Structure formats: structure tokens, C-alpha cells
Image (cartoon, rainbow, N blue to C red; front, top):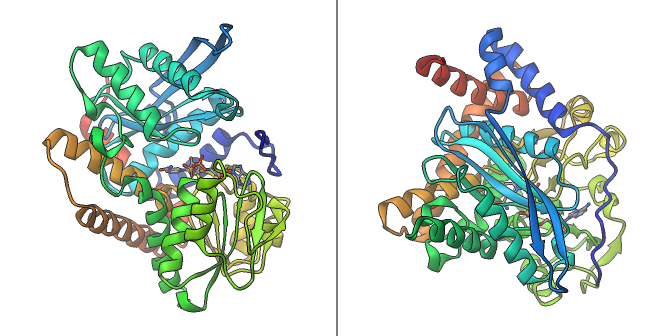
Length: 424
Ligand code: NAD
């Protein structure tokens, strides 16, 4: 099947502006002083590179690549690399800032960054992607570093791309430096538990939120948009805890079964069908966007930004939204969702399991020691639960949404650290 350009309904809001609006609101609630506000709102470094890559047919194509470091106040910056036709600098800037707040919410000593290359990886061969990643790494040798800026996978990238990045960086330095990147294959120093870490964090957040809402997971239905890394692991782990997943989706559309979809079988089907859910057995095919407004208890958007927006927010029936994707709810939709009384576990908390285990991977690489999967899971579950409690308490104390509370927790931490460190 050819690549289908995803086409969610969009608010036409600039994702960076959405993020900034939330940042502004939370800063105001915190009473942040204007000077610190100015420091925290600006990315510290923005790098744009042109990557000339020889394609399999011998032609040379030029791709645009970005790396934005939003903040390195808490430590080396951390953030994934996204390969997608829609990648643009505003999106990467928004994602970089999200990483700053995400690391701060879960209290790990990293700043925030993000990278991206505007390209269509589904229309490229493995060799073409390898050359693209190596070209990108080579252009970013002075940006990346285990103590400076540590990339990771995001949409369109995975362990193989991280292995090429580590190899290219290591060759340039004449020695193996595996702590420059996380999300590597296990044999190269990847952490056990990293592949499922983000989906696991989504599941843990969902479980704690259900407890607060007094919802019994065994009587709960859930729809998940996006069946990639985050969505598919969230689906299997939620199923294991009794939740009935009635709908899942990917770029090919949504698949519904009121009696429940076997998430593990769907993962196996997808892996055997070149990553696509098209033709999933034992499920009815429905329009992709209809998944978001199904009559379910829990909705997990785990694909793209701005999919819940002012056009469809009013029709959402879920009691709980757990944001697996970054920025799936537009700023304009926030108000509608709040008025409907839906609890939202915001992206910077709900999907922070990935960066938490990335941090564990970096720690293990630097220790030269490997933790068991059990230890990784236990420690990351604890971190997500503690972060959830901090944010929940803040939301009650200030009578704000979990999203505003998460920003307040994060901004407060970065601002206090900046005040101690000082500037020029
Ligand atoms: P992925 O590439 O593995 O999967 C993305 C999935 O979304 C695929 O199934 C794709 O077909 C589907 N999709 C794309 N557009 C869609 C649409 N319009 N409707 C329905 N499905 C659609 O990516 P991923 O790693 O799972 O990341 C998903 C989201 O989670 C992104 O927003 C990413 O930034 C965020 N995230 C990922 C991680 C991580 O560790 N992978 C960590 C934090 C946040």
C-alpha cells in the first residue's frame, strides 16, 4: 500500500502558539516575573541544515533538517528526531519547548530539544534513510553530545535510525560513544523497557486518573488514535489491566469492535502487514476521525497534534483523555473540553514515560551497567505516579486544569533553577 498523507481536521493554529498560550497562562497563574518569562519563552539555539543525499537512482536530493534546543537550564537537552512530510520549524520549536516542560514535570535533569527532517520516510528506501540520518548527524556534530544534547526517536524514527546516528557520531570521535543518543537497539546499549516506555507511562497515567475518577478499569472502554509505538503499547498494557479497547486507528483509518479489539493480535497483524492496520480482521472499518467522538470512557490520542480541536471537541464523549501524542488537543479546544468536565492528563505528563526511560538509558550507558526490565519499569512507574500526584495536587490547590497545573509545576522548577544559576 502506498503512503497516505494523514489528514486530520486541523484548527489551523500554529502549534508553537498553542504551546505559548498555555505557557503564558500558567506563567500568569504562577506570578512569574517578566524577565524570567522572557528567558523561558525563547529557544536557546535554532539550527537549520540542508542535507544533500544521493538517492538510490543516483539523483541528489536536498532535505531540510532542524534541531532546536529550547532550554539547557536543567541539564543537557533531550528530544526526539521526527521524519515526516509535515515537519516545519514551528512544529519543531513547539516540540522542543514541550520537552523542557516534560522533563521538568517528571523531575529528570534534562533540558528540552527536538529535531526533524522534512521528508516522507515511507517513500524512501532503507539505504536512503540511512544516508539521510548520517548526513543529519554529521551536520549536527557540534550540537549533539552526551553532556550537551541527546537525541532520541520520534515519529518516523526508531532504534535503527538511532544506531546509525550513534555510529556516525562515534566514527567522527574515533571511539564508541553510546550515551549520545537514546532509544538504541538493546545490543548497542539501549535500555530494556524503552520501546514500550511511552505507552507504559500512558497506561500508568490512565490508571491513576481512573482511580481519581473512581472508574473501574474492568468496566471501561477505550479508543486509541494511532497504533504506532505509543498507541500500540498503551493498548496492550491497558488490556492487561482489564480495559476494553473498542477502537484503534492509523493513517489507513479506524477499526472498531464493540466487544473489544485484541491489541496484541493487532500488533502482530500490523507487523506482518508492513506496519499498516488496513484489513484488520474482526473489526469494522470506520472513518479515522470518527474514532475521536465514539461513546467510550477513555480516549487516547497517540498520533498527531491538533486532532482534538474546536470543530470536534464538543462531540467528544469520553470522561477521560490521556494524551499519548504531543499536542493532540488544540488550545481552542481546551476550554470546550474543560466545560464538558472531561479530565485531561496532558501530554507533558502522560507521555513522559519515554523520556524517563531515555534518561535511564543514558544513566546506564554512563554507568556501563545494565538494569533489568523490572527495575526500569518499577522506577519509571514510580516517577510517573509521583509526577501525576504533584500535578493533581497543584490543579486542586489553584483550581486549574491538569494541563495548566503541569505547566505550573514545570515552569516553577525551571524558573527557580534559572534564578539560582543566574544569567550573563
Ligand atoms: P509512530 O510513528 O510509531 O506511530 C504513529 C501512528 O500514528 C501510526 O500508527 C500512524 O499510522 C498513526 N497516524 C498518523 N496520522 C494519523 C491520523 N491522522 N489518524 C490516525 N492515525 C494516524 O509514532 P509514535 O512514536 O507512536 O508517536 C506518536 C505520538 O506520540 C507523536 O505525537 C509523538 O511525538 C508522541 N510521542 C512519542 C514518544 C515515543 O517514545 N515514541 C514519546 C513521547 C511522545
